[in-house]
Image 1: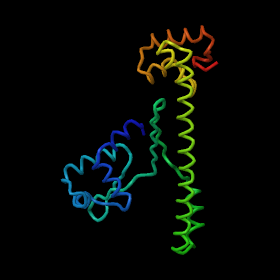
Image 2 (image 1 turned 180 degrees about the vertical axis):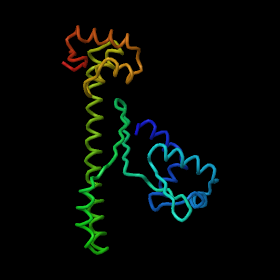
Image 3 (image 1 turned 45 degrees about the horizontal axis):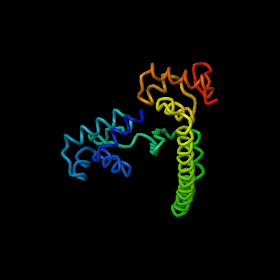
Image 4 (image 1 turned 60 degrees about the vertical axis):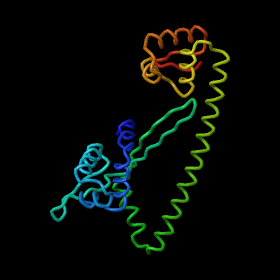
Length: 209
């Protein structure tokens, strides 16, 4: 799913509340409307958008349409003075892995499963802390790169191009879209930076030299 589309969908409070409710159990329309104190027509509109986005699915049970979460999706947003990134990941698990996990855990008592869940949640928190630490270091390094570029490059378009290339290779089209700068100005800036010996091109992609 497109990250921008997902951000737009989650920007609505009622859609977030619907997803939170469905994360606990499948629900039918009138049940969702009652729990959230929102009219059924509005709920149907939200459900339709969530279903078209692939976030939820519906099934017919006892003459009612039940809605449930379709799968595992993780959205990450990073915003700092010199970095903006949005990434969407679908967390998939193979049929073989599902079978293996069920065989491993099905014989365990509920108390043991609770202990295992606590262990996994603790592991996830540790990974999140490591991720935040890495993100903080990335942000600080980007600040340092921006300061170094500002000291050597006076043209603001060239400076923006160079800072973008610090994070990875780009085509001129990618730079134009990312920086919201006309392709003609991007090409001019790339030419000037290449003349200064700061970047190079290989297979239509530009690199820091």
